[in-house]
Amino acid sequence: MSRTATPPAASYEQREAVELAFVAAMQHLPARRRAVLILREVLGFSAKEVGETLETSVPSVNSALQRARRTLEERMPERSQQHTLRSLGEARLREIVEEYMDAMRRGDVSRVVSMLTEEAAWSMPPLASWYGGIGEVEVFLRKGPLNGEWRWQHRPGHANGQLAVGTYTWIEAERAHLPFSLDVLTLEGERIAAVTAFVVRVADTPDGYSRWPEYAPSPDRVQSVFERFGLPDRIDRNGGDEFSPAGESPLI
Image (cartoon, rainbow, N blue to C red):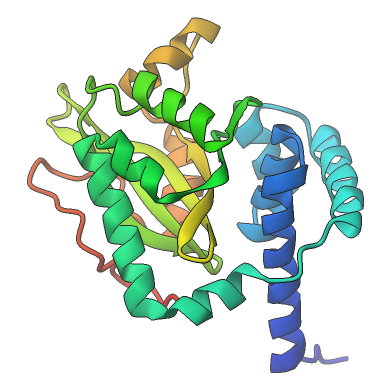
């Protein structure tokens, strides 16, 4: 029997439902369940890929996904991320992404914070920890990635309909900027309500996370996160942050 294609209306409704779940996840799920939900149902990773990315087992991934779904059934928001993106329009989305990239590259914490909602959340899978509320996020940025110790470059893109930015740090031995994380942005109006940074570096000790940008990228994670969404695996020292990802479809 031939397989029937999903009607456009049904496909649209499925996509809206996934994006509603994404927004709800940012607000109501523990960090590990949130990461599993995003990787499985937003970014399209298999349970095996999620297990490898989060350094856990497939049964644990499936269990976390089931618990996340139960939570979301009770707390589904009314307005989807796609609705927000369409209402803003591609020109305004371009401005938001370019401002985010420029502020991050310059290490301008105050400017980044000005783009956030009061209840903004910042998480970094595979770490289970996350930062909630604009005050916590500001402290994290000042003490962590934007403390002035690392040189950043960025590439814009999107992941299954979500705004996303590939972040890269300068590695002197390579004489290039190499992948650090894929920052998936969730908007609330024109402000950023959540940044979920899928880190592709592997620290060898718990203390290593404080120096995470200095560790080498994991080839497997770069392939599964960056290459999956058409982002380059390195940027030379003259690489810019222009909003023109090759081969990407329109944002809305």
